[in-house]
Length: 424
Ligand code: FES
Ligand SMILES: [Fe+2]
Image (cartoon, rainbow, N blue to C red; front, side):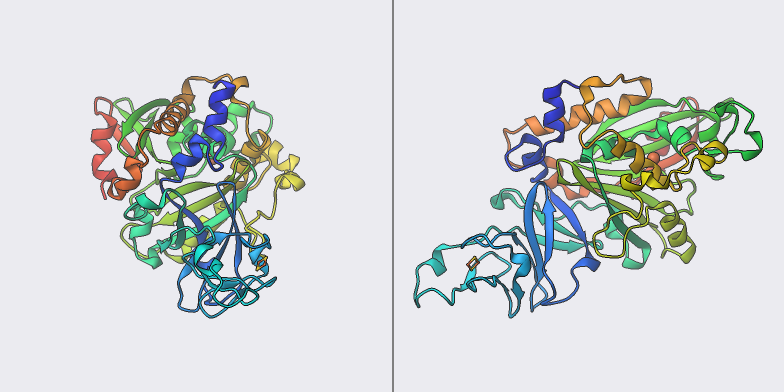
């Protein structure tokens, strides 16, 4: 559990909040590249860390991220004209370039000093790794590059990035991402032939590729600090002399990488990006370090991903307004939840806690060790305001790590034993 004060510190990300300031010291992915392709195309409304912004690609292909509202009389620039290297407010014609400078004020007298003195808030922006990134921190300390996560380093054809809206705080989703203990329960499939048996005796493994997950449902957690965040080892019994280790990476401030099941499978990671305190972009990255993704890889990924509406909103097709498609017959016979798809099962339980779960009411158990470590680390970073930079943001190479799922002899330290699998 957390005190209410700590819970506030962990979850509030708006301007001026400790966590908001900390996150703003990093490059933040917020759009898929596919969302902002067209030069002089429609500007895109963006909400990020509780700020209302507008994104556009100008005539020369440069990207801009500006305050949503015109500094003149506060018109929404979504209605603006994106033309000739700038975004023009349609009310009185003030025009802004991607740097935030005003380049035209047609309704003001010629030579107006306002042209020089007025600026609109603008943030540096980058396009890399199939996503578009913003830097919303102090402009004097822009980090050198986005974090060199492996999904950004591989060729475009070796990577798939999707995103979807989740209607809860970022930390709630992230805690699901580092919580290996729920996998064998929430995502378990049931044998319909054994409907007469108790739940524990009916479970098939989550996936045919993960036999240990179903057989040992009480993993022991070992958490190690790392430069970039945390290395989380979940240990399950395998053979008499061996353990099956699933090592998940948490990378500050909101990335996770989950273990793959075999060397030939693609790897999956997430970015849980706060739209505001109560909404999150769940980015899912799937990539293969050595080869292009095959159609089968993509089909498999999209099969466990949450299908979204085709209207540019990235809202899931099923959400709490439709109870996530809950089917009680499916729940009785075929799986734990009656909800179809791993991503949707996660979304259902995470959103069901409310937009910001009250962590003062929790009862944590032994399998919550990683979650406790995550909260401590985040709170420590958010409160470490003596420096105006974050070490992780200034060292993008720290992010060059992978997750791992390995069977190791019982006497082998999990970090040492998995090192060859985690190296990039
Ligand atoms: S409100 Fe935008 S130019 Fe007047
Ligand atoms: Fe899950």
